Structures are given as C-alpha cells and as structure tokens.
Length: 329
Image 1 (cartoon, rainbow, N blue to C red):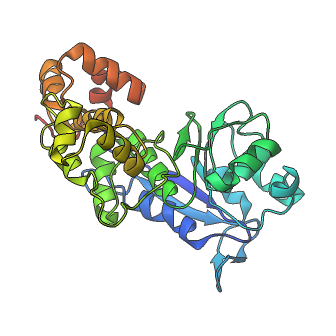
Image 2: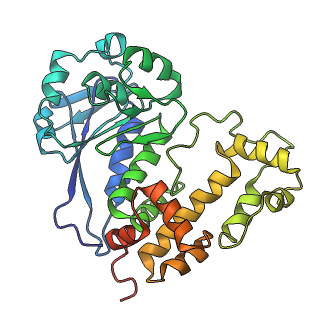
Image 3: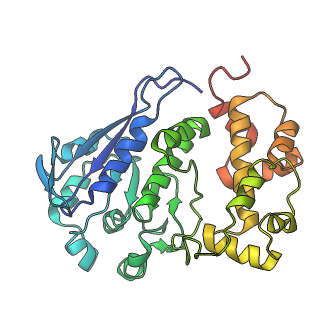
C-alpha cells in the first residue's frame, strides 16, 4: 500500500444539540489510522456554523475554533447527530445559515452522517434517490419527511460511494471503521479497532435492532460455536456441527444465532471468511487458489464471487490496492 503523503482531511460539522459521544467517534477512529511508517492517514478538524461554543445535549458545551468556511477544504465531511435540528426535523428544510454553510462543500466531497445527522444530508438533497439509514427510532419519520430517500431501517450503515450514512451511536463506530477499511484496507482498520477495543468489523447489512441482544439468564448462547468456527474457517462447516457445539437442535441454534447476532449463521460465516481472505490478500503472496482454501471458499472462482459481492472489486484488484507494505518482500 502506498504511503499517503498528504493526510485525507475530515471535517466534522457540529450543530447545536450535539451528542458528545458521536462527536468523538470520527476523531477517535480516523485519528488512530496510520500508515506502516506510523504517519497519520487522516487529518480531523471540527467546525460549526460559527466559531465559538456549541451546545450539546449534556451539561457542557464544546468550543470550536473554525467556522463553516473550513468545509471548503474537506475531503470528507461528517455530520454527527443533534437533538436540536429545528426545521430540518420538523419540515425537512435547512435553515438559511446551515444552507449557506453547506454551500462551501466542494463537488465530489464524501459526505457522511451519524444517526440523525442523516436529516441534514437529506434536507440538503445529498440522499435523493440513494439508500440511507438513521437510528431505527427515527426511520419511519425520516422516510415520511424525505420520500425521495430509499430508507433502510434495518441496517447499521449504508455505503453509496460518496455518500454514507449510519444508524445511531455505536453504528457510527462501525461506519468509520468501514471507511478506514475501504480507504486503506483491513490491516489498518483492524489495528484501529484493536486500539479502541471494539469489534473490527460488523457488516453494514447487520440488523440494527436485535430482539434479545443479551442472552436470557440460564439460556445458552452461541458464543462457543462462533469461537469454534473462527478456528476452522478453512473447513466445511455444516450447520449441524455448529449446533452440536451448543448442544442444540439445528432449528433452535439457528433461531438463537439470529437473535444474538442479527444475521443467519451462513451470513456470519461468509463475512468471517471474506475478512480472512482480505487479511491473506493484504499480507501474503499466496496464489488465489491457496487464499480460497485458507479462507474456506474452496476454489478461486468461489473466492472471486464472494469478494466481488462483498467489496465490489476482484481479489486481484483488492490485493494490488491494499496489500500491506512489505508483505512477501
């Protein structure tokens, strides 16, 4: 992977009623991303509609040094959630002040929202005709207010190239990690996740709202089966073998797995295999047939099919773009 000489500039636009946790997400995730030489891959700056204090939904304000003119310098703009969106939330329209601020954004700038920050992107027209999500509690209202947007209330985040949106709170972490992974590969994103002590990857299509996120007392979970799978991704993994690890019937195991993870066992295993393939493509010079075997896809053709579906590029293109510097040298 080529060293980035000039860091990609991320500008975070904060509005009154800001949720402090979500302000911290882009600063933390992008701020930890570094190249093999230890140089930062992103420069993260914050602006408001004017320099000075910005109210939060907590008992403190944040002070921003920059006004909206900073948006003209951004490669990526991130809009975190706010609980004081006024006419944006009530009528789906920007205030004159916010419209003037967004006018500074250059064409082609990547636009990102966290939670209700999606209302800002929608009101500005960035989401017309595109897939988008927001916190599940606001999704129905969001769709009524912005009928031109293809709202998906069931996913953690959406990626439509230059416009990305996420559900609430922790889904913002998932989206920012996804962006790092898309920009610089799995190795960099996994290191950021390790530093922040969060899971390295949750697929955007995973359900936002899991009916029972914590196993009921005295009820077995599927944790042991998942750990068992991770040691055997290169092997055939029939569902009956997974269920046997938890002493459950296949039917009970499948239902419990979906309740706990938000996806089916097959979808989860495929995601882990794609992640394993990404690591091998970045870090080794193994032939494609060997990568396919190690990741559990069996053949190079199957590997190409699943990597293309998950990442939008072929394994060969992914390796050429993201192989970790020095691997195989």
